[in-house]
Image (cartoon, rainbow, N blue to C red; front, side, top):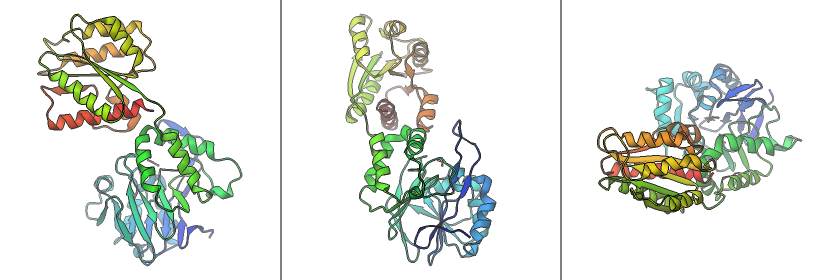
Length: 407
Ligand code: FEO
């Protein structure tokens, strides 16, 4: 058997999928690999598995390396089925193995694979685990690719098992970047743009965590294992994920009792905190439309807010919204918001106006598709004056808008 060694006593045990693989509304024309790793230590450890379609053959392959009952740890860096899909078949054979993952990862794996009676070891950022002859250190990397994700560093080997991060979608038997003659950068960057770029602030956080560790090999979950110049690939991520330029936000609102003003101010505070130059304007009946038009032209993100009175907007905000169809807004993003007492129709009417312009409308659908985050509601609806929990949610929403903005 041709064993592919990643480090001393550490082997690639994945699967090369040379089909045209459906993935995130695309077809991976060059296929992909699902990279799983076997660390043959005193406490034998598996890091990630393979796609759910190949779970059984994965277990058969692994039997050529070890009696499955001897496996003590199964590290799951990321729960998506192209990584954790072999877990049910493996856990069924490796009955005493402890599953090592983040708190959210454990919750999701239990649900996905009915693993309610398994022992889990819950990992927090920078925790370490002695696997007998090697030390593993874990770093939480939320949203790279989904919220529960972490990565695993084998300290003595200086090997970073980076999961989706630093991956490439390509079906290759060569596996190691130093064995490949062609330039892999285009495929590497293509993967980054598709999977990681929407989460670029988190990419920056991740780079800050790993900059201080000594990395000899990056062993990701898809495509090439990077043992020739791994730092070059970290630098590419760093460069591609850096905020590119200064952006400006404009928050326009009309208010009845002052609650919508409070919403506007909370959004503004958070944006300013994140270094977005932000202007807040109260739009009254006698609004100077010329002045507002100029401010909109200068801005990259515009929030439009109103209280709801008799199922309609208040103040002069509708005059502003009517003006938008005569403006070029395709490079800008728009968000509707407002405070209300009963149904909050004004917020939805604002959304309708924005939908009829060429502005990029940030609604819940857009946020899910852009970031994968599904627990925030856009447009921003606040019942009465915003209270503590709602203020936190508004701030989180403002951060999302900022992330979209600096892309
Ligand atoms: Fe490779 Fe997030 O899946």
